[in-house]
Length: 254
Image (cartoon, rainbow, N blue to C red; front, top):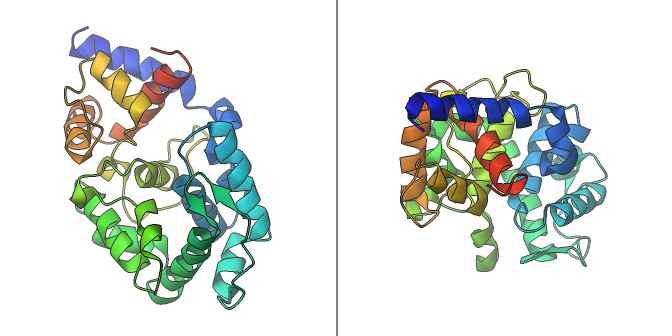
């Protein structure tokens, strides 16, 4: 396919998957249970953090997290007292355990009480063409409180070579607003044009088969290459093609 044909093909796939039916089998259904902006943000952030592995298990364990937070994540975060050290005992998703979840509540409380919330951290530290520096800054701020070293691995750092798939997915959820009913578009202080594709094994493999990406690793360098190409297809909303790449990989085994 030439560039025009490829764009037409991918645009069709975006329309196919970027609709409310997508929510039924995707972790984005967890923040869709809420209406308060801060509840959506926190539910989305925690869900995205554990979004690796089997999607049904991700949804199951994210639902467990919301129940532990009384299905009122913002209120829980703002009123959490860390002396209740056993509250999260028994929670685990792959390598993300109760100690990690406990600190993530502390880290979120720190961000909302001292930095004005997640949106402010991301918008303040993004550049005109990228949110990747903001992810790096978020990680630094997030871990300013005393914590176990192991917990840091659950937030990837693009400036250390990571594609940061889960945080980029979270940003897509919060920022994109195309009225299709999947992404929320509740963050207005920066735009979709700054976002990066959530690059994982599925989207990466499809991108390579379509000639969008040559690099074999799914890392920060590969993401930069993919971002460059996707911006040529749609400079205003390049990350919409995540729906096409992910859908082709997961649902169509492309």
